[in-house]
Amino acid sequence: MSSNLLNELVLYLRLAQAFEKQLQMPDRDRALVLAGSAAGLLKLRPIAGFCRELILRNNQGHMVRRWPDFETALKEDDFHVFLKQIARRLSVERAEAALREMRYECDVKQTDYPTDLEYVSAVMGVDPNWLEKNFN
Image (cartoon, rainbow, N blue to C red; front, side, top):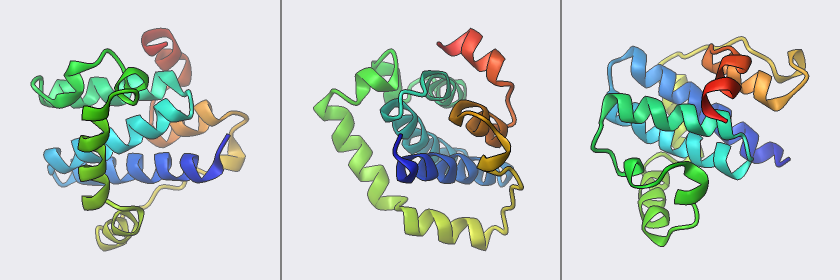
């Protein structure tokens, strides 16, 4: 599994949490689109599904509604155009800077978890078994 992509996934999940704390929901949803896409590429289907669910709970008309999941969306040119727009706006460097600026902290460490799913679930504060049951 690509550790860079996993790092991006975690970065964008943390950014989504930071935006949510500040009630910046459109920005939170953008971060979740990037996180869900990374999760889809990593075949972490429960994480990708939960990201999509969180986006649609906040905005039922969001573009991700057009596809049943991120894996399907990632095969579509329309989605890639949308994804590139968001990625330009929220590059890894900008995401890292935003987290520093918001003084976001998360003490979850990858080495404390046996699987990527358990690690990412811990970052999200969600039980991995619940995610697998509901989004697999």
